[in-house]
Every structure is written in C-alpha cells, then in structure tokens.
Length: 551
Image 1 (cartoon, helix red, strand yellow):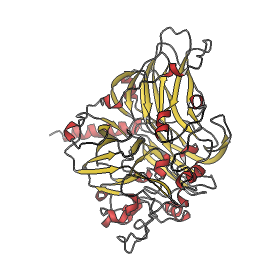
Image 2: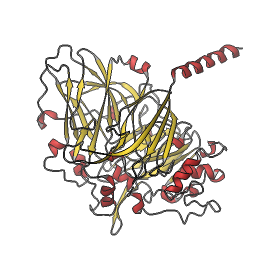
Image 3: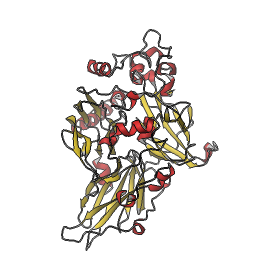
C-alpha cells in the first residue's frame, strides 16, 4: 500500500500551495471625480479611493482576495463583477446585481472574498445598471509565474481599450430604453487606450514582453497592432493557446488577448501602437459616427525604446489597415477535446423589439430579462427544496436549470443585423462552432479541439455553439456584453447544480440583507419575495421600469 507516502505528498502539496498563496486585503471607497478622459469635456466619473483610472489589481493564482467596497457615491447603487474569475465555491461573490447579490446601496458596503483563479488577463467592473462605462472598471491580472517562464517573458505591460461617452450612463440608458433614440445605441464620443487618448509603453531592445490586451468597452470592438512588429498570441481570455503569429488582433467588448512582443535588437526610433474602434460594426447598427470619427476613434500609443529616439508621426488611415487573425483558427495549448455527449441542449435566438411607448428591448429567450425582486442565488439559498424548479426564479430571468456535471450545449442563433459579444459567468466554454447564416444542427461538423473563451462574438445573422461542463454550482448569467443590450434584457440565467449547494445557513451576511432592504428588495423567497407560496410567480417583475436605469 502507498497510503502514507500519498498522504504525505498531498499534505506537502497543500502546504506548498498555502505557502505560496497570499491574502490580499483592500478597501475601495467609491466617489465621484470630475475629469476629461476624452479631452472633449469634463464630466463626473467613478473613482476608487479618489483615483482614476484605478491601479491595476495584480494577484497570484490561488491568492485570497478581500476587497471591501464602500459606496460613497450618494446617488447610485453599485456592485463589482470579477470578469472571467470562476468563483468556485463562492458564487455569492460574482457581483452581478439581481443574480448573485442585491446592489450596494449609497452608504452601504460589501466585502468580496474569493480565491483568484483561473490565471490570466481579466478585468473587474460594475455589474449594476449599466454603470461601468462611467469609469468603474479596471484590469485584473492573475499571475502564473510558471506559465510566464515557459513563454520566456522578460517584462510585461497591460493595454486596455475602450469606447468613451462624455455623457453619464443613466441619461444615455434612459434615452435608449425609453425610445428617444429610436432603438439606436448612443454613439461613443471617443476611443481610449489605458483610459486616455494616448499612452506610452517603455521597452528595451532584444527582449520578450507579455502584452495583456483587455477590452473594457461598453459597445464597440477594437483593432490593435504595433507598427512594424508582429506579435505572437499565446492566450485568449486567459486560456493558453498554441503560439500564433499575427500583425493585429480584434477584440469585442469584454475580450482579452495575451500576446508576446519581441522587441527589435537594434532600433533607431520609437514605434506606434495603434488602436481603432470598429466603425463598420457601429454602422451595422444604424449608427452614424461623428465627422471626425477617424481621429477620435483612433488611439496612437507609443512603444518607446528610448526617450532620445524620435516618436512616430500619426499614421494615415492607409497605414493602419488591420488584418486580424481569426480566433477560431487558434488551438488550446492543453489540447482539450470537444466535450460530449451533450446532456442539456439550450437554443437561444436573439430578438429585438421597439414597441411604441415602451422602447427597444433585446432578448435571448421569449422575453427580455428583468431583474427580480430577490436575487436568483438568494432564491436558490432560501428555497432549497424547490431550487431545481425554474418557476421559483420567475420567467423574466429566463432560467435554465442544469444538473451537476452535465455537458451543456448552448446554440445562439443571431437574427439581428449586428454582432453580439456573449459572456458566460463562472466558466470558460468551448467554442464548438461559429458561422454565417443559420446553423444546420450538424454536431459532427463542430470543432474536435475547440478554443475556449469566456466571451465570444456571434456575427450578424450568424450562429455560435458553445459547450461547458456544469461543475461549478451557482447562478451564472449568460449575456451580451454590449452594455445597452444587456440593460435592454439580452441575458439569461444558468442555475447550475442547485442540488449540490449545501444545506447550511444562506451564504450571505446580515449586512447583505440590509443592503437589499435599503434598495427596496428582498433577500428570501421566490422572484417576488414570496416564501409562503413560492410557485406563485404572478407578482414577479416582468417589465423594465425607471428603477432599472436611474441609479
């Protein structure tokens, strides 16, 4: 028998993990700050501890984060979602208002406690009433030193891209959701790189840099390339891939790329790092960018080898053509094969309506998502005996209950004339297939070794099929990451393995109950807070109201 050596090895591994892991404790006080990221006009945005942009949050794989968020905004509720973090065992820390918590009311606070994982380039942002385009967002880097050693990394940098609005989101959402814009999403005023119009990146010659490119956009996709330099893609959305060389990349809202930049051995000047919003994507939605959009939607960063070298001149449009690689051509480094057979089939179809007197609404199921009176996770916690019954969550959250360890396939058929970046909380999924037109349902033609992402783009009038294993019990949203579409109802709820959630006391503190009550919400019962007759859902919210987009 090998019981003792095996136990000793496991104990050693556990102690080694504990020795390497750290506890990261921070307090984030959210306040308003007036500034002008676009350089066009000053406006209020949300700062963390009086600073904007907030510093990059860098942690190591396995670290335990204790982030206490204090809402000192005065006039808006808030929350923080840790985009791409799986929250294994801590679904209540996912930060999605209405799904896993009530928002944090003005004057309230909430402490997010979770273990960092998986490793890679991620970001955090508000997941509350379309708030993150008002500045409450930032990069989250989960370090894996062994992975970086294998890549030969000698330095690294983070590059964020985002669209920017000079008007605050509550007003923009109100105009959009009440039909004032006739169903057209507000047009961004400018594009940002590292939350400014330009940025400088210091490098040394003859070295390999890991460049973490993160899209924090609310609507627009971005292209990015470095003048006269190829880069090597080594990870997408945190998942390592077989190295693939390219001249440029394209990121939809919420996506990330890790690329290796091999700097020149004998440079004689500095080079441009060019980011540009995808104007064709905006135009596909019937939007008309401003006349000076070429300038405002392009960012010229500088890859600086030396302060003594001349900086590049702004490149002409003909010099900034982008030919990005197709992410479907990438191969996961671990060679994970397509999951199967499928246990649960979910088919979703995008739908857009613009009803008179109501305004535009998007949906992925027969009706738009409407946030419930009780967060869906709290319904699961407090109605355990009925937690596998979709009725208790209410039809307006579009619930799909899937059993533990089931292989789940979601097929999304996009009947819209514009693209949609689709994000799943709590998971990376396999992108089994994607194409134009209607999917013929041929599962044999799906990729045998598919890429994995947490955010995938589905083309106009196209389709995408994703698969994942339901091994992470909790409540997870699946939604469009274009913020206007999300707020207009383009999301569904995956209630995953509710039978595996323990029978212990509900996993939230009394302070969270107080937060719910301060916002006029409940922390127990079905979607309407009904504990006595939880299968009665007629009182559940079914329509968006002013409360959904005013703070």
